Image (cartoon, rainbow, N blue to C red; front, side, top):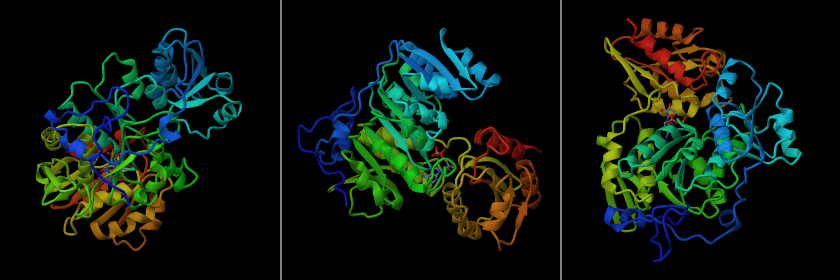
Length: 501
Ligand code: ADP
């Protein structure tokens, strides 16, 4: 299907094409990176002439949405000389406190936002605000250009971007790449949808070597020129159907990662949803595979217990799987994606191996929070869709009994996808929160199903039922917003309850 890892002709240029990109250097081990380069794509309007950056000085810029991204965007727009208005439909203390830290001269439009949007020369959108917001749509129809916070930041940055998206694993892979590259280069920004917004990188005076950026579909919806040097699409599964009209609309938003790219598109060879439609969306990006299932194909795969890169006849082992501190098959996919991205960025293989083996799991993702009386308690609160729960359960063998805590606010995904895996791996399921009733229907016929109200009740029920050898797993398949401010608050409560006497 694709020509992967073909050697480029001499003089084909730098592996990472955004301004300021490192060119690779044979003495620092980037040979593998060069060997991974694909064929040079022919130019097309999509990559050679993305829409022009927006001039901000003296313009009326309305930043819509006062979360961390909106605040950073407002500060960046103000620094660039814009007349900034911050708009938010909320009027309470939280939004006033957020606005109080903004530069002097910033105007507020809290509550009613319509006028601030239609009278702007440019709207900068926070990812938390749906693109379909009626007053935003009205402003767009009236001709007001709308860009996202990531786009604004990108227009004020020159270092090469490694952009990571996918339904699951974004934060893990973003952090992994950031961790590996930080062992090589001094100034690596790791953020975006995770941690600091990309506008913070643009506000900083640091001369970044790399920008490692997690990207949600909501952020990708509002790009115009954004163009990573390396784009990683980890996987695709139904999610966020509370905000998208269809699964394909959600997938299309994800594929916008490649829209302006002429660099490397890293794709998961085992993810059918991605590969089936990748050809259509890649345009000028050069495909490179990770999680390769066929030993004859080029790309990054696991061979003989090692993460290995194959390029033609050249096979380079990078890191024994047993050196990884992360558990689960999904994390092996994540490690391969991170290794491939770092190789393409020119990082020496020995530093990739060192980074992979020293990386530890992020909190709330298959995080072991307690081991007591022979019972293991695992916090996977970040599992907010069915696909991530499937991966979590697949990590357990059939003779490892799991007590699974499921529930929260359903985002409209297909909850039935967890059924088979629950029957295979769980010995008891405790349902809590808004989605409990839906799950009760999905899991009809399952022998040991208990329905409770809150997470705290669920932990009590798990404790009462658990015996030595069991694993209590919070992998809820749902958002947390019915009972918590976010998945972190839910995971923190679970951790506290799990360690409590
Ligand atoms: P994201 O940022 O995309 O939400 P995270 O790294 O925060 O991804 O992980 C979210 C959830 O998905 C966790 O439950 C985690 O265990 C699971 N997960 C991580 N990587 C993968 C993957 N490659 N495939 C499926 N599930 C994954």
